[in-house]
Length: 128
Image 1: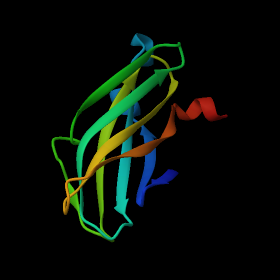
Image 2: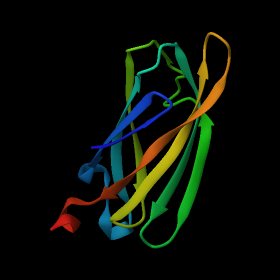
Image 3: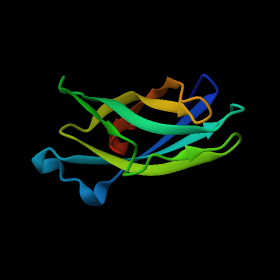
């Protein structure tokens, strides 16, 4: 698990290779990732947008951005957390992702950026 805290918001990431949804012979490797967002601040926050940087070991990279996460813009109370699962495909058996969330304090509409720590996407046989 990879974890980072920015401005009182803790992001934890766990990854899993999805062998049943992958096809190495056609250069299709699918990975799932579970993200937990913990609000360690004293104020209620809402996740407004996300921005991802996806790196493949062949040197290609993609940027993905948009509103919310998996169709939601969760509101997270102080001391609470929100978790979700999503997926990413690569054309090689290893790569990485990093990014950020645009968060908003509900009380005063102040927006701030929370970093998503870089995490690796690696097919298990590469770890030997």
